[in-house]
Length: 150
Image 1 (cartoon, rainbow, N blue to C red):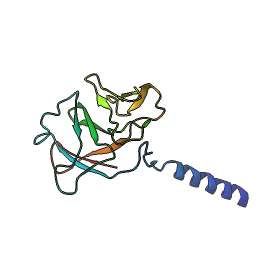
Image 2: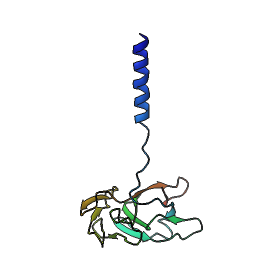
Image 3: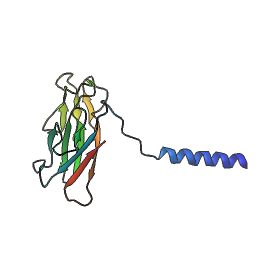
Image 4: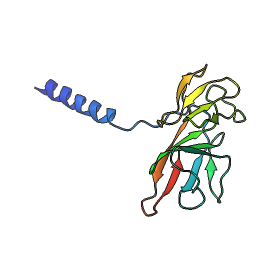
């Protein structure tokens, strides 16, 4: 009986630990990301199915990651944020170039990444890791304002 309870408790504990959200894996060297996007203000030109690149912050305290930020807007309230650094090259000066069809290409190694679905997955090339993905959260008290963090 005691053994059954211990096994049940162990199974329950294992189940609870497996439900914890996994921390994002870094595919490029860590660099702080804290950036605000305002679709009704400075970023009005980031329309659905378009992208925008940010190489530096615009306000005090903002940071754009290791190689800069690539934002892809898929729909009204659906934004994806990636680091511009190619994970295969691991060099902040080698930045992927976004294309109008929801992909990004590394000019050095030729890897192609899919950005339209929010994963940054590798479509082709020598890279085995996806683009570094950052968290995008809508600011609850402001309409069309998003915060990007890591």
